[in-house]
Length: 343
Image (cartoon, rainbow, N blue to C red; front, top):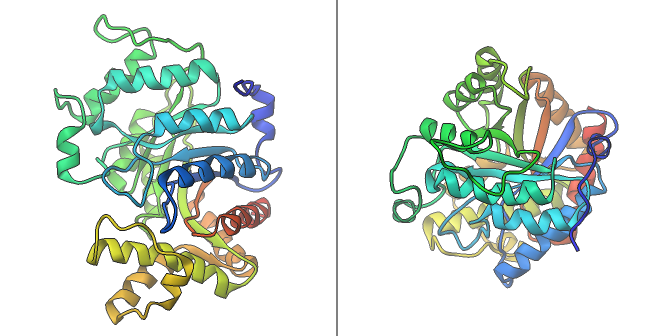
């Protein structure tokens, strides 16, 4: 039996009582020794856990041809996440629109929004999230540009596009967002009147400038009269700095393996990563991926996160925690929620 739709009041209550709003961004990492099914089931379990910590949204990414990330279909995964929770808004972070027919996306998210009115987000991205070979086998055969695709997609939730209707037509359409990692994407979101998420987790350092550009470009649109500027960050919190870094470094070591050894490698265990002796170049890469993010004990993370929120003036934080120990992952989200309540 599916979970009951949340009321507007319940959704407002489903957030940290004070401080900045926080949400989850998940790539469903697959660790060595696990199956994709294990990773997906843990994602559903994690969603139920973070709901109790006060997180507002739970988004899943889209990747193709990467066995270490089990997120090829955000629309499919959103269904079990919605069913396992009661108040979380669930969505995509992001559906990469160039990979899809706009009509197919409208139909998929129309089903979700019809079943769970008011609880579905449709975050969109302009990349393809995979190799050129994957991209060539995905997408609308008409190969429309992003703007044309987006106009078509939005039209389906407003009664139809060029005489074609996307059914089911939900009573409460999903909320559109744009996710990006550049000033260009920020300006694009602002001009379209969309809420925007800057992917600091991918490109560290550019968030203040991107969100300023977004606010400057923002034009009010139906459903959003003021800009809503968000940032997605990597955060790994533990009871000690050493354990937090050990956990965070496992995923980055996996990125190194995929770039240098085997692009189809699964992610290494915590023990495998800790036993590896990094070269100078690998160590530099490790530091470039971790240092701009938020890794450590709560007393180490809290002042850095407070400064980051002040500099970006973000309205909401999306938290990405990719660590091999599931219980440690849940604990990290719990600690970050407590930090966010004080910001």
